[in-house]
Structures are given as C-alpha cells and as structure tokens.
Amino acid sequence: MNAAAKPVTGPFEKTKGWLDWFDRPSKPRFSLPPGSVDAHCHVFGPGAEFPFAPERKYTPCDASKAQLFGLRDHLGFARNVVVQATCHGADNSAMVDALRASGGKARGVATVRREVSDAELKRLHQAGVRGVRFNFVKRLVDFTPKDELIEIAGRIVEHDWHVVVYFEAADLPELIDFFTALPTTVVVDHMGRPDVAKPVDGPEFSRFLKFMDDYENVWCKATCPERLSVSGPPALNGEQHAYRDVVPFARKVVEEFPDRVLWGTDWPHPNLKGHMPDDGLLVDFIPEIADAPDLQEQLLVDNPMRLYWPDEKRG
Image 1 (cartoon, rainbow, N blue to C red):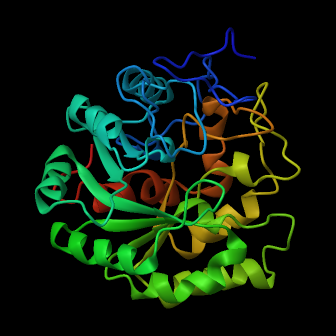
Image 2 (tube, rainbow, N blue to C red; image 1 turned 60 degrees about the vertical axis):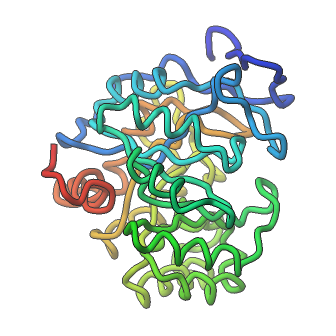
C-alpha cells in the first residue's frame, strides 16, 4: 500500500475512488538493456501549474515530471516517451514542459485539434513531439469526427510524425478502414486491448494480428497487462510471474512483429480500478513476453530509437 494519498494541487478534487500511483516500486530483477526506452508514460499536472481540462472525464492525483524521471532512473530506463494524458485535453503544456526538462531524454505524443496552427505544430516538434494520439475509447473522450482526424494526420506528415490509436478490441472492425487510410505510421496502444479471457488464436485477436500482418506501417505497444488481465496474478508483493493470462498475447506480437513493437510502463496508470501495480514488477514482466536478448533489444532500444530518435545513435 502507498504510505499516504497523493494530492492534487490547484482548484481540483480527485475522482472518487481514484487509485494513486505506487510510490515505493521495487528494484527490477530484470536488467534492462543499456539505452532502454519507457515508450508509454504520462504526466498529470501538477494541477496548480498545469490545470486539467474542463472537458476531462477524470481528475487524477498529481504526477510530475520530476517523479516520472525519478522512476525512470530507479527502474533503469534511459529515456521516456511521454503521451498526452486525456485529462489535459489538447493543452499539451504539461507534456511539453516535461520534454523540455528532460535534456533530450524524452519525446512526446500530443493531442491536437483541427484548429491547431502550423506554428504550434512546429513548436511542438521543436520541443520533441513526434506523434499525435487519436483516442476512440468512448468512456475516456468525446467523439472526434474522422474527417477532422484525417485532416490532422495529413498535416503531421511533413514533420514525419506518426499516429497513436487507442481503441477497444471489439471496435476494430468499424475502425480498420479509417486506420488504413492514415498516411503515417500507426502505433496501436496496448495491443488493441484484447479480451484475454478469449483464446489467443481465436477470431478476435487473430483479426488484430492480420491487421498488423497486412499493413507494415502498423506497430503496437505490448503494454498494460495490468489493464488487460482477468485472472492475474497482479504485479504486487514480489510476484515474479504476474499477469500470466496476458503473456501469450504479448509474446505473440513480440515474436511475430519484433521490429514493430514497443513497451512502456503506462505510469502513473490512469483509471485503474482493481489495483495499482508495482512498476518494478512490471519491468520484470518484460522477459516473460520477450525471452531472448535480441527480442528485448528490439523491443526496448532499437524500435523506440528508430521511431523517436531516428537521427541519434543508441544510448
């Protein structure tokens, strides 16, 4: 358990029942390859400095850039990819502030609207943004017309950005035509949120794998077992084989698409309902899904560097 509830500063009140991030993560037993990237994480506020969006669906506790970078160093990562949190809407200020404070060790994924100016896109690029996120999870965001998203995707091509998409597995059939029309690399969050109570070789996950197989511009993040797991066990209390029901799904994408997978902590784990994982034990989940050194190197170093720091050597 956390020692004390985490605050939210400013004129905000945390969502009732909000689970705060775990403030005493264990030291991972798994040694990350040098230059590893936590390719999916967030910052929340602090609310007093970076107010949450009026249209937000939840109000979290604060989770600052300093706390994120402290976790990065504790776990053994070299770099972060900071994804815009939905509680901040299209105001990317907190995320950009983290990028600017990182000394080049962080890149970002922004949320933008149709009215974003060319000057703002250029400013975001200079700060380290390399992608935009389109969220189709209805409980988290309001619907954005697809023609608006296509327009945004067309405008980011000149910056060589990619599009990150977040959706529920059951919604893939109605979204696939849109995804394949995007003129960029497409990165799918959390393996498309498969139902891990269903067979790994069943029709639903097979549809997702075929989507990746058919379109070489599609990548995915083998992330968030804590969100997908049905039977666990959770990454708590030293558990070294957490989320066993998710392992076959994540291992499948890592082994079939080794050059198009990413991994990240998802710290500070927004909107979890059942438990808050120990991030050190989440790192120990990695060799369960990537059991060979070459797969680990691709997942944690080669792939994120190619996508987010293409002009830099590893390290």
